[in-house]
Length: 376
Image (cartoon, rainbow, N blue to C red; front, side, top):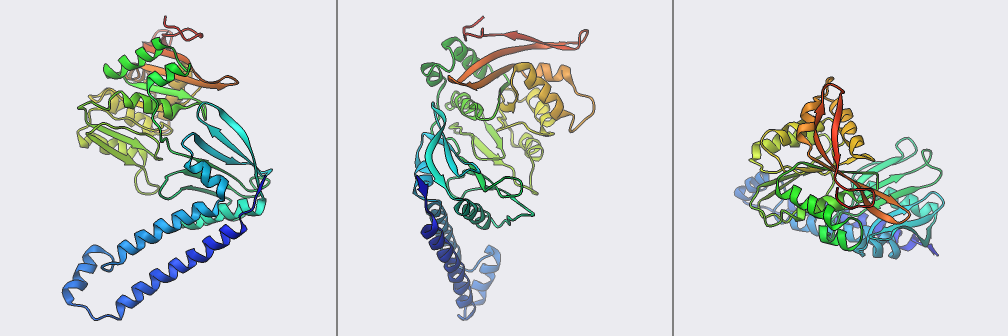
């Protein structure tokens, strides 16, 4: 079924312009009202006219709701559906959804190229970005819900294309993983003990294998802990219910993952979980985990335990030429590898790192589960 967004998009654009005019008019009226010098000083201290901020916040909430409405009923419903974790528009106009426990499926809904482009442009406008043929890509975080939006326009794609990745809402426990058949009870016990014993754990896998979901399950194991947790990520995905928690997020041009890892060391952390290791911060993280802050967990794109260590090497080389392989082997204790195939998602490998063989220049890995998922 084709989704027609013309009326919703036009309404959004009209009201968005009106919101801007209302805010401008409100500020203009403030200039015409005589006020006491003390109030003017207060306005300078706070950085906005008194009374303006609540109106601006309400305007942002309204525009966020209107943006979702402008995307159409089907997309709005999927954004509200706790079982849907990703929404994708392909160049052919078909909309695909990824559901927990079911995988990616064709929704049966379609979107015209014109409507797809309007949505991408509206998201770009909402975050103050420009998108056109010379700059055909927009990466943004949708307001309020925190969904990660990636939109593309021609010429890099044949027709407008986007993906909306929702942050995790429901936290699955290791017990849930066992009940759903993703891992065995033995594997869950190994991971549970690893968290309890403050081992450093890497969760590896390809795109869409559920790395973040498993990381949240591991973080759920420390929900009642007295540890001080300093959590670092670049998009809002990790959830931790520990009472002594500091959550930090990167911001382009302001603070990188490396910056935040270094800052975390001055916040008296007991554990430093990280959303995804993807750059030179791998070296900073390795030093942090290996020098008095064990019990970390992070995700990495790799298809095997050995591949995860090799990927760490590549990322470390973005910071230094010589990779401290012995330190890497001493610091990373467990690697859990997730895969997604025709049967769904499953834990394909769980390995313990037992050091680095300097003679043969290779990592010592001990498999803890067989391909069938039982412990060794």
